[in-house]
Amino acid sequence: MIKNLSSLFCGILFGLGLVISQMVNPVKVLAFLDIAGHWDPSLALVMASALTTLGLAYRLIIRRPSPILEQSFHLPDATRIDARLLTGSALFGLGWGLSGFCPGAAIAAIGYGRTEALLFTLAMCVGIWLFRLIHRPAHS
Amino acid sequence: MENFTPYSALAGGALIGLSAALLLLLNGRIAGISGIIGRALPPHQRGDVGWRLFFLAGLLFGPLILRLADGNAANIGIDTPWPILIIAGLLVGYGTGLGNGCTSGHGVCGLARLSPRSTAATVVFMAVAGITVYIVRHWLGAED
Image (cartoon, rainbow over all chains, first blue to last red):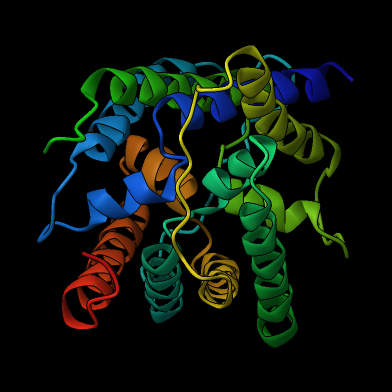
């Protein structure tokens, strides 16, 4: 149970960070992506700040033999840069550029009370299921 | 540059980094939102679903608490017509499944770990998102 509570706390922090940084606002995200328009560099600072904080903390945390509440760290072991990674990232970039929503921002926007974000999130879940239907059997 | 908000960007970004650091320190997990959503969705294939559902609940509650505390905490502008939102949602779900990550998993956690794989993914989704916005706004003239 304690693992679930720590996870809940981290989720709350993440959600607060998305709202405070305004990453939750698609207009703001699209203004960052629109380099040729009225460019708003704010989100570059959101990433730089998150990366500095996590980058420094990661180096300290990973020296530990294990996390505090688990037996071991669950880190991704994939290292290959293949067509699957690049195609998936390109499709994600297309959807992100069309809407200004990434998965975390969409969930946070639902929490803030925006029903359009719920519509986006339901479509995203369908997209995940479609991916599983098409790709999982070949890779499991 | 008139809408540049450096202080809220730095503060919010630090909170996102702190959240990811704590999730790693306490639970040993990577705060990749698309992966957390994907593995929280049925049918469950592997791993523990509980912490993922709690993380997602927090991701909903944090903004809700902020809104209840201060109704003007955020301004969320959604100009995208709903059919495009649905298409974008499908692409984001499918794409993050195929590419194993999104802005949080690759863009924040992967880059912080100096993962070449996440760096490649981030360069691609940033570039494609930028080109998409350029085409929509400056060729198709959907805005401005």
